[in-house]
Length: 459
Image (cartoon, rainbow, N blue to C red; front, side):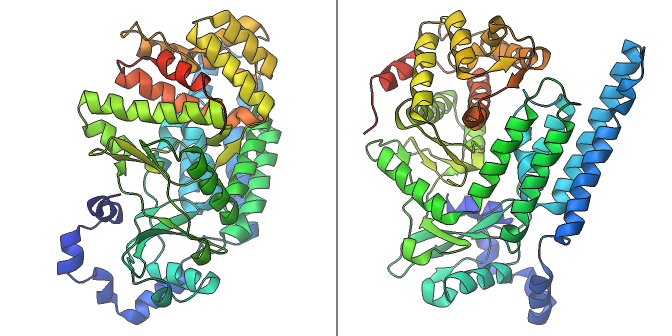
């Protein structure tokens, strides 16, 4: 991330930070410290639980009239539309207020247009925007409680956060000798509150699963709970980073940060600073050729993860990928949500992609059925609609976006009602990438990338 990106993320520019006093100073040091002491995730454990269950009950109650006998189709559609719109607003408002795990849940489902009605996807997508950061005094206090004095650990420490998310935020710092590092600091009370909130979310989704037809909510809930708990385990995240470093050691177009274990403990994880621009912004501003290059690097990196390594970076948020335009290289960050694929699953996925390379849609449908996927219709043929997640006809430039739109429509008309647990997060990755491919329409061939990766075996 460049200094300009860091400044933009923090809401300042380098010039304003060097040439003008931080406006918070006008409040006085005592007021700043008072604000920092008061900053925390809102509410007690019980009050947060009440708010989560309350909003779930409110959203579900709006669909209750659908149970009225002999309800006309026009009336039914009006009820659903109003319930969708109001429910989406309620969930967004509650997620913004509570932050933490509930906001993380909203971010996850907003990236899956195949799971929720469009009003929910549209409203919850707003949660992908930058979250207001915690005061720097809160961050410094956390570092000093878990690792040591900031002044002794770092030669310099930027109090303006480089990025802020639902569970943690990142600051740039410099080590003695000039090495730039990213300091990821978990918010206070996250470890206290998140396990119960993750379990509550699972219970709620289990309870309403009989009301929401066509979505395997129990499986999704279990995967979400597992990944939320993984995201607060920084020792495990450090292990994942080092595994990715090993897997991508020979890949010149991918940069994985190093971990500074001696400076990482508890709620603090220190990594090498990775330069680059947020991938979404890079794709929006770059010329077509560069867009195609960036997308190729991203897709190929995931093919390696799926087909060769069996270790998946399962959070395809654009802020987790930093495009280095001058080097045509992609930096990958934030390894809290990673998924290990069992060896039989990895091998089955290789078979899927082989069938996709041969454009054998029926074979893909059968393979998905063997893996345990089921659509509402229960027919193997219903899985063929999802074949485009594993291939696309690279000779037909005009139909990729149409294929993507058909995929989403098919997913809503005959949705997946059973998904293997370990492939929930893979589905999120594939949905996001398929959408990118449909919009950018690259001229490189997917089957060339797949064929090259199918020739590899794990190192």
